[in-house]
Length: 190
Image 1 (cartoon, rainbow, N blue to C red):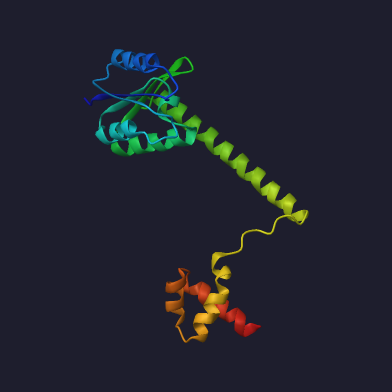
Image 2 (cartoon, helix red, strand yellow):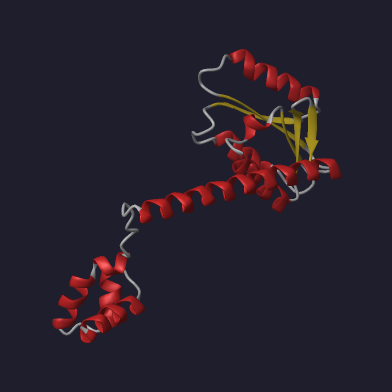
């Protein structure tokens, strides 16, 4: 049987009592080792990294709430994927009144639903982005990004005129060799 590892976090603005309460709940849940820190979720979470590194196949990582572990659903899913890759389960003590445990089918289902919602939100965001770009193009307000290689066309022509070979031009300018050939072909066609 694996080890039960706890992770507790409060942001710097929260009180010490919040961290103590999490640690108490984690101990009550049977955590043998607890990693705790006082940092915002967007800061580097060194104790979380240490807990993830410490966990071994068969272990379970326990947190009191999902927002103590992850800053977003996508972040949560990435952490769970990392845990899963190591053979480590995740247990969240409180998910809106219920618990989540990836060792059982219900926990896996809840996690899959979270993933589906995250993917749905991402698809909606991309759709809104495409609609916004189409509208801006229709109004003549959107030109798109100029390809990196095209911005270096003058330098490509200059180096070619100096007798530099296309492979060396690509290397010097940090662009692909095919881009160099496209730029040079455009010059001869003109």
